[in-house]
Structure formats: structure tokens, C-alpha cells
Image 1: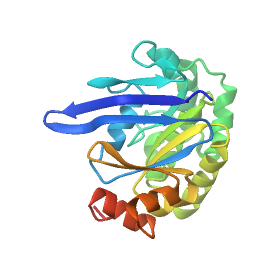
Image 2: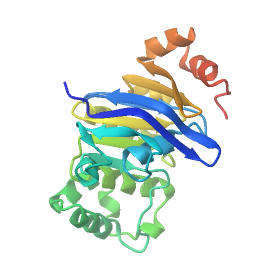
Image 3: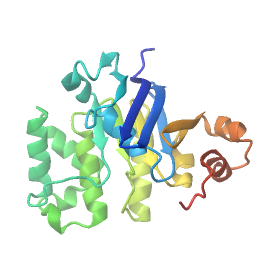
Image 4: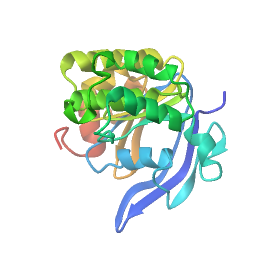
Length: 240
């Protein structure tokens, strides 16, 4: 089976800081990957490079065997991205914003109705984005990532700002969608990772410290819980 994405020897530095260090990674359809790591581990930098937002210093990123550096538009069409902070157009209503983005993506406007229902934001369709709570803004950003039904989803802290009920709904939806997609979720929440992921990556200082099922990661760290494995593999407390 062809890989959904394949990363080889990826590097990115900011001055003297090595954000991503010779990282290689491969994923396939049906994988729901929890990307865990402390602040500064390189998680957001990795996702930003995978979407073409940041150019790597060296290394290759392939999306369904297509090189991102060679054919960026083709590759980007395969990816739905929820970045940190959910950049949105605050002076637009939710529906007008999503309609506008659907047109930019050359996506049928019927898609807007579908993604608003999935993100459970139908009730705020006509509300200006600037008036929304942090949680609702996050859900609008999530809806945007679903436009066009891309086969790959990269979700950077998708539950940030959501209340418990909203988190439960979103995580359930992500788990359901993972049957037909490749999904990578960046999170600081270990319980969240355990509840949804069938593959766990622990990242620290720009490198992958552990990669596998929950049991495999626990065995690699010789730990009895993901919390202990995370602490041991990153050599930081889970509160950092």
C-alpha cells in the first residue's frame, strides 16, 4: 500500500535552534497518529513543513508519492490543516468565510453545509467570527480543514479552547474519520492521545524519540503508563 505521506531526512533550523533534526516518517491510510512532545519539540514546525507553509532546510516530503517541493499545489490539495491559532477572517460571518474559502479551493459550496454540520457550527453560521469564543473559533478552523474532504488531516492542538462536551464530540468525529483518512493530531494531553490514537509519536528536540502503538511505546520506555513513558523519553515533566 502506498504511503499517504513519506518524510525523509527532514531538517529545519531557526538560527542556532534545530527545530527538526534529520527526521524521517511514513504513514498510511487508517492511521490516527498522536504527535506528543513538550513545547519547543518541533511539532508545529513539522506540520508547517508538511503543508508547505515552511520550507525545510533539507530533506524531502512526499504526499502520495508526489514531491511537495516539485508539485506543491497537487500535494496541498490532499491535506486539510488546522494550524495553531486558527487564523480566520474576523470581519466575516462563519458561513461567508467558509463559502469564500470553498471558492478559493474550487470546492462545491455544498461542502460548506457538510463541514458546518460535522463541526457542529450550524447555529452560528451567520455570526461574525470576531464575536465567537475561542472554542467556536477553533471549530470554524476545524471545519475549514475538512473542506474538500482531503485524505490527510494535520490537526495542531485541535481541542484547544473547547469545553469537555465539545472535546468529546470532536475526538469522536476524528476517530470516525480516521477509518478512511490519515490523521496526525498534535497534542499535549496524554489522555487524549491514549483515547483516540492507534499510533503514538513522541517528539523531543526535533527528533522522534518513540514511534508505535501504545504498547510498543510503553515497552520502548519500559514504562507502565504513557505519562511515565513521555517523561522518560523527553526527560521533562508532563507539565513543561
